Length: 108
Ligand SMILES: [Zn+2]
Image (cartoon, rainbow, N blue to C red; front, side, top):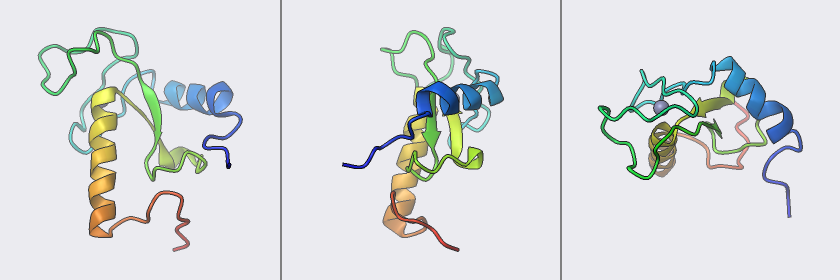
């Protein structure tokens, strides 16, 4: 079974992307101005947050859905809300045929 993430994902890639983002969410299509900060309370005035997330936990997401594609332009630090909207957008684009499926190499 192929490894889903590169061996240095947690040790090097995630810390580098979080540092690039200054430990704040880099925003999504649905919430482009989101700058939710790592481990701080979620912004209560902002709709769309899960009540089960008392503080923000940023994750690094591969925009094309393939974590093995570690080009920094393909990786983004996102809060749970932006991750959800980004993944929903990617799935919708895949259904419309605008983006290659995950794990499919784009040559052009
Ligand atoms: Zn966000």
